[in-house]
Length: 330
Ligand code: UT7
Picture 1 (tube, rainbow, N blue to C red):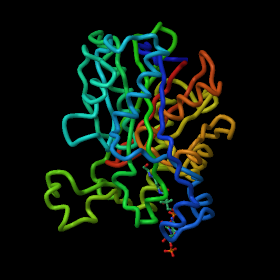
Picture 2 (picture 1 turned 180 degrees about the vertical axis):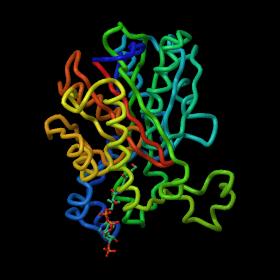
Picture 3 (picture 1 turned 120 degrees about the vertical axis):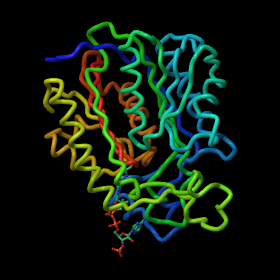
Picture 4 (picture 1 turned 30 degrees about the vertical axis):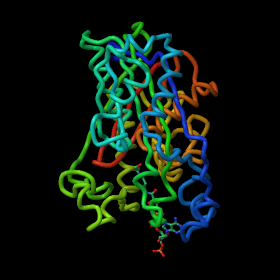
């Protein structure tokens, strides 16, 4: 039984990925790795790579057009654009403002949020709260990344993991029955050093890139991140389920952040979720950070993996650390 009023619902979903595919075999020619290692340790077979010269908002705009069409909402009617990304087009202005220009959302307020791989869940949480306040009606929540631009292509420990892409959702007031049943978000800044990109900000500004080039790439302590991801994504799932009077059996489809198949399997086991209720597409896209959940959600919707009235559980974890979950009645 839902024990909270439902305020907002997803009325449109969109996703768009670059055409260029980089396979594990391609990577094996670039660094000391193999298709076998990548497949068995991560579940990834290939990932998409953005075209040079294109910014993150280019792909986000393609995804947004699809979502707005499904929602039957002209871009001019958007009140807010929330753009979750760690790879914006520029340091400023925000990727959201570039996106606003591209789709013609002339009446919106647009801004970015930074919550790494949990960004889309943070965005849903924010949009749900804004709609519940009664102040806003039409919100576009975007998760989009061009991670290939911040990856050290000589570091086999990270370069095999990530990919580029964009996904988004249009959020509008609920019909009272369907929509965001609950969200849970959390962060722990004490663990910021385990997954980050030190360079480019105020501590290591762009002007110092020549002195410390290694700081201007994504860095990750893989094993530590793995350990925390399993525990904290499991906790986030449990919190949003129990907090709203549900358990794992009530969930029709579980869409976890697509980082590593072993992480997904460990969480699914903890939640007693059988394989056919867990959505996985990281074999084709790798880890696209904030775009991972909206791309998977859009794909699962079009493949008929869930239907009207089904309960879908979204869970993510990322740098910060940040983690969170959303329970959605479709
Ligand atoms: O999206 C945010 C959340 N991100 C994540 O959740 C990622 C979490 N971490 C992971 O998915 C895993 O830790 C990795 C996939 C990054 C690494 O897998 P692992 O099983 O934890 O491997 P490891 O780091 O413990 O390394 C094992 C071995 C090492 O060699 P030695 O020291 O045992 O000789 C690595 O050097 O595997 C080696 N290795 C590789 N070998 C071939 C690391 N990367 C590669 C590679 N190809 N690409």
